[in-house]
Length: 194
Image (cartoon, rainbow, N blue to C red; front, side):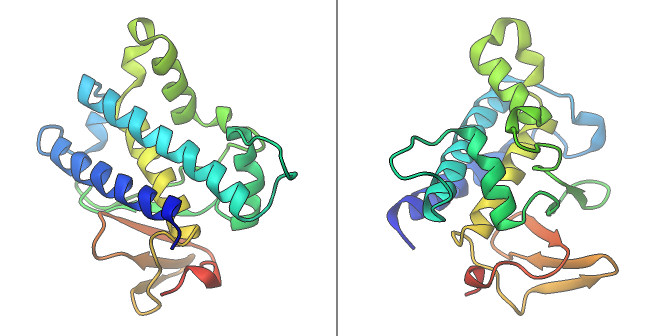
């Protein structure tokens, strides 16, 4: 694993730990999705910034951009297509009363700014005083899910072919060291296995 991806995994591990600490104070339940706070705001900014970095890294890694061209977050659409991540779901282990699945990259099309959580991140980043309520648990969960999805599909967090559950509509990949799973139609990218 290269240094950039290794650093992103470390940053995400810290984010996941901080998220688990947050859930000691905000119960992981649908009723609390609109809960917002300075701690959630901080984690949303960190997760979304990590997501942007991973999207740019992935677009460069897979040579999806013209040589010498600077990447930006809109390049995520090219990466989504290459990695086939638009419809992949993230399972939130520990969600109450039962595990919840989200699709953090669905609906982004050719512009991540169409993603509700990404728009909220940009809004609070540029105008916290008027949009602070958008730094909520729902947006944070989706931002973390987007990061986890990119990390698994870029090879930073490896799929273990023995850790999976078959569902009627696909396969759920389990990651014992993480509070997330990935459910998708078909198999993950071949280079994502241990």
